[in-house]
Image (tube, rainbow, N blue to C red; front, side, top):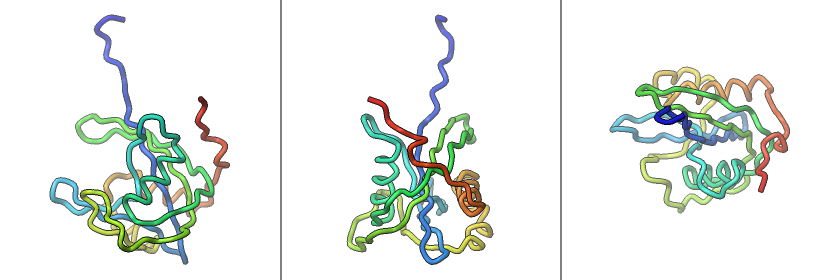
Length: 151
């Protein structure tokens, strides 16, 4: 066992929020490049995946949402070898606070049609963005109880 590399993927969450047929996305600056992503971010200590999804959505968009379903878990290796496990949730928008200061790096929140998102391919932060949206659009929904925090 000594000296073996321990694989430590980064646990992240994302929400697919839909209103009037449009998807809620964020435009963020990564290394000076503007990219599109779902409201998403890293799981914090002592936080459930569902709590993280609600928090990240509010911090990045100013939207309070209600989680409605679990879409899926996605494994992805980014350039440079970083590994991610993304837990994607579906959510309905509840209320928006336009005066809320958004997370650092977030330029704006915007609503896009599925066609606009698909056409933005090169601007997506990762292939996970379209995959989670496509799975939701295809009807993929699992009960929220599928992902529970055990204490």
